[in-house]
Amino acid sequence: MNSISAFVAALGDIPHTTDAAEVRLRSRDNFAVSPLLRQALAGKAADLVVAPRDRVEVVRVIQAAVRHKVPLVPRGGGTANYGQSVPMAGGALLDLRGLSGIVWQRPGAARLRSGTRMDLLDEELRSSGWEVRIHPSTRRQSTVAGFIAGGSGGMGSAAFGMLRDAGNVTALELLSIEAEPRVVELRGRDVGLAHHAYGTNGIITEVELPLAPAWPWREVVLAFPDYARAIRFAVQLAKEAGILKKLISVQEWPAPAMMRALGGLVPEGLTAVFAMLAEPTRAAADDLVAEFDGRALSDDAEGENPFGAPLYEFSYGHGLRQIQKSHPRTTVLQGMFPAEGLVATLERVRARLGHLGPMRTEVFLSEGEVVGMGSPYFPFAGAEEMADCVRVMQEAGAQIANSHATGLRGVGIKSIGPREIAFKRDMDPHDLLNPGQMDLGDAIASVSTLPASGWRFRRDA
Ligand SMILES: Cc1cc2nc3c(=O)[nH]c(=O)nc-3n(C[C@H](O)[C@H](O)[C@H](O)COP(=O)(O)OP(=O)(O)OC[C@H]3O[C@@H](n4cnc5c(N)ncnc54)[C@H](O)[C@@H]3O)c2cc1C
Image 1: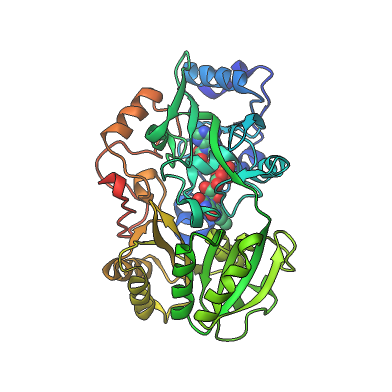
Image 2: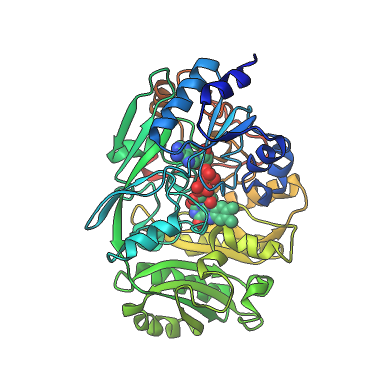
């Protein structure tokens, strides 16, 4: 019996499938948004999918994997876009959506099972007047642990900062990958060890989060005469602490026209700002909009707009997805624009790359400062041309994560130092968690040739 057959036999009544077609299909995540990752990850698949129903079954799966040396790849909603949840060396894809629900809730805090879907979680929390502080634009598919292990920020970051910022994740409970799995609880800054680690240093079973008051949110589409005024408005809105917001996303013309679902809402030549504003302070934004020569084109209660999807599904990674529906060759880079000289840096990038396509910029907080994230939307014309864009953005002052590479070091959002390496070795001594995803060497391991710098944060210094 080979190790996979022995592992399958050891699973007993834990739900699993070895059906090749199904396993192949479920081994993909959303890496296809990148033309380079489509090539790099073609054919990578698990040998089987296992779907434990509770933590006890997760422990049994880990024990079987250790005994038979079978790689494990934790998986939530499978929405990751750098191939984070694609099995690099086969093994078992561990579908953790069965670990769902609220463990406990008290005012302003909740402890959740890791596979809880983010939209269902908010639905439940809102009945008591609370919601999660930050959710990704994939809220309707992604799980709370998948977001923490694979994502970085999103709706709510305009008020609370990125997931990595102090206070945004209170605690994580993880299981180590050993014959007798240990339950490890990370709190405070230690949470950062497992955040954005792509499931390579333990299986998250529970997540403790601070909550925010659940305001009624307005989805507002604003229009400005040009990108310069739109981005200045966006930065000022981010600074206005009295105006409660969840999303500020600047989409230069013709990006709004390329998003067909908007139905031609934005007049020709105007730059759109998609904003989610709390209803009680919504009107307070009007004077600011006027100051930058803008106007509101639509203003709907959350979930009631006429675009067929929530407004946040036109921002962050979803902006590209909307555009790819009619312009499939369009791609983007993952640029981070630091607070210092923010507008000037963005304008330098626009001046040098604007001929390729319109700028997309999310504006939010990182460690208390207003920063930007995005790049132009541009047609993919090969890895070399893309590398040129990276260089231009870096010269202009942007930091670039490599959204066209896979592997923790290749993407470069998380820095990996001695603490991270020691934690990985402690939690996964047999290197069974998606081997190949976390390179313990010093070199930048990348499947593509893009000269990305990674993102640098103050706390890494
Ligand atoms: C169109 C689009 C838009 C996106 N928008 C955003 C955005 O706004 N903000 C953002 O931050 N990201 C965004 N992403 C990336 C991705 O959606 C987020 O990372 C998402 O929250 C992942 O959640 P998931 O449940 O789908 O995780 P998965 O894709 O299943 O997994 C993500 C990573 O987490 C690991 N993982 C999953 N569950 C566990 C667990 N229990 N224990 C340990 N590791 C685990 C996986 O191994 C994988 O490495 C976007 C992606 C796409 C394709």
